[in-house]
Amino acid sequence: AQSVTQPDARVTVSEGASLQLRCKYSYFGTPYLFWYVQYPRQGLQLLLKYYPGDPVVQGVNGFEAEFSKSNSSFHLRKASVHWSDWAVYFCAVRGASSSFSKLVFGQGTSLSVVP
Amino acid sequence: EAAVTQSPRNKVTVTGGNVTLSCRQTNSHNYMYWYRQDTGHGLRLIHYSYGAGNLQIGDVPDGYKATRTTQEDFFLLLELASPSQTSLYFCASSDWTGGNYAEQFFGPGTRLTVL
Image 1 (tube, rainbow over the protein chains, first blue to last red):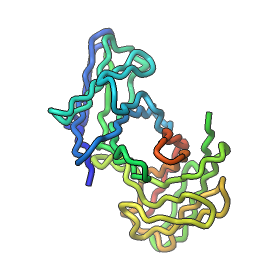
Image 2 (cartoon, helix red, strand yellow):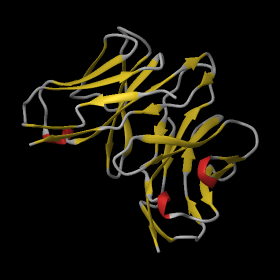
Image 3 (cartoon, rainbow over the protein chains, first blue to last red):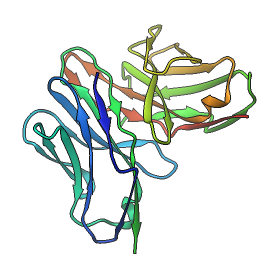
């Protein structure tokens, strides 16, 4: 069964600094991978998604992520963090299959941005 | 963009109480989902449905029933609520056409407290 691990429960960065949020997945086969963001008191919104192809995918608001099959990773990056990025970030995986498969989420990483 | 609404937004009940959480989506998606979000666990799938009258069991179904009455409406039922069901509940919807998986759109969440 697929699983996702986000090893950092909390991350604090300074505004303007670069950011990397880590995600490790486990899936036997070709995965589809996603990053979602949850702003305070809101539901989840899709930041970006990876379907088999270019390993670096671009998302909204300057976010990007890189898929690595050898490392089973899908880390999220941003070059310069803004205070409005303060949120909880979830990595998720599902199988690349013609039949339906469930989306499995990681535990989430809470990002705080300080001046 | 798909709209997913949930009601109530907040609910307090007592142990053994009967609770119904409601979800409506207005973009004619065929799949709908109920998740619970708990610190350290991320989002976990309770039940999902691929159409009116259909119900599929998720990963943490114990203590929950669900019913999909129409394409738009999906309900989560807690018939004998317990404190362990205190959580933030999200509803989501998505389309599914063969192998083409579309993103899940999330509602704003319902915070349930069981005393």
